[in-house]
Length: 114
Image (cartoon, rainbow, N blue to C red):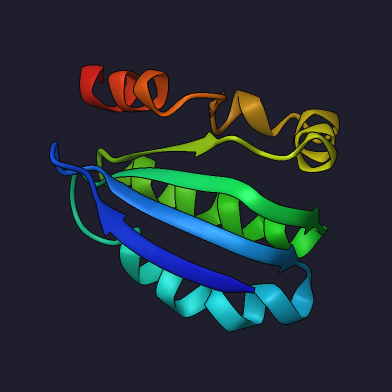
């Protein structure tokens, strides 16, 4: 699993994940992922368009960091999950915790408006 970070012009962090969010993949990116989600009032888009597999440990990584962000007045959204990953997210009711969007403009609007 690979993780890359960029920041939009409006200060939103964009985490792009590539690969499998299984135990090996999560172990490879967990520390960096959490570091990018640290701080007060942080807004993060997690681009999952390059993730082809999502295991329970990957769900834990997302939920743990989303809750941590929320406790510090921040927010996380998920962008463009693949159909298989979206299915796993929906089955586990993750969109109730972390909103899921199919386009970046909508995701940014939600993060900036809250």
